[in-house]
Amino acid sequence: MFETVLFPIDQSRQALETAAVALKLAQQHASSLVLLSVVEPGQDDPAATAELLQQARARFEQAGVSCRVIEREGMPAFVIGDVADEINADVIVMGTRGIAIESDQQSTAARVIQLAPCPVLVVP
Image 1: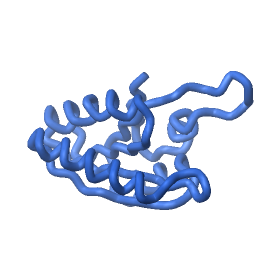
Image 2 (image 1 turned 90 degrees about the horizontal axis):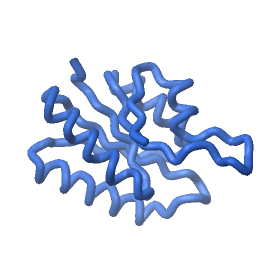
Image 3 (image 1 turned 30 degrees about the horizontal axis):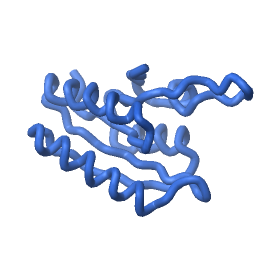
């Protein structure tokens, strides 16, 4: 059912919990797994992001799931939607940190849901 699973990863604590869901989904469906990291200019440390991707890749491959890694720069929600379209993703698996109460900003997950060309599985 899910040939290609896109897993956008960041440096949040939720990313580890979400990784377990992405791994299980990929194993159950014998899916191709694509790890995506989006570096937001001026916000993220590219070296830390690259290290995170390598750790995640090693973890997935140790569990028997090979994965492809994509690194991009830009606004996360837009990049995630674009990459999902480019790779023909069947599902995007991502965590959420919710909506900031003190502002009107939506979470990245909420924006991805609006922009994605495929279903989005949001792990709380």
